[in-house]
Image (cartoon, rainbow, N blue to C red; front, top):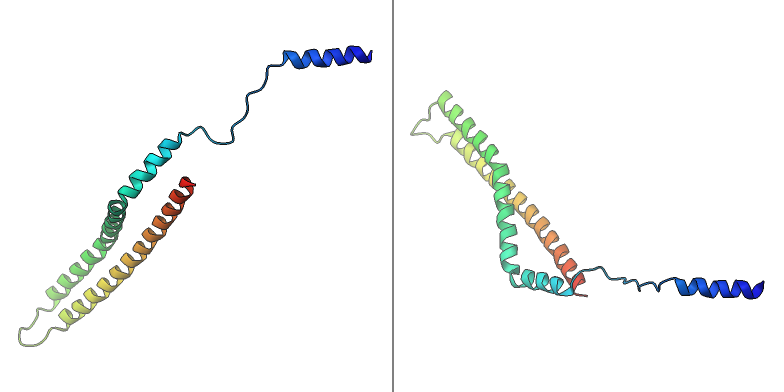
Length: 133
């Protein structure tokens, strides 16, 4: 009976087709990665400039309603009390102060967005570095 089991085991093994070796790497063409990385690195300055421009535009879009409200408030204030030409108008001084504060706020927002862009760019560079390896 032992010899029967042994012959059955060898017959079963012979009937099983050999399995294909499994590859641990994904089915991506390495040349595609090389092409993408070369495109990104050759256009790196353009990509950075595009991201900065996009961040600046978005910041300006977010500040536009605030500037419009400020201008409307100044117009309403001027309609209520007409300015005197001989005396410095405190409304104008106040307007200038408000304008300066808004400019400072917008500069801070732009800096914050530039930092975010820089962080994203660094992450992108890290990913590209990992793709090369």
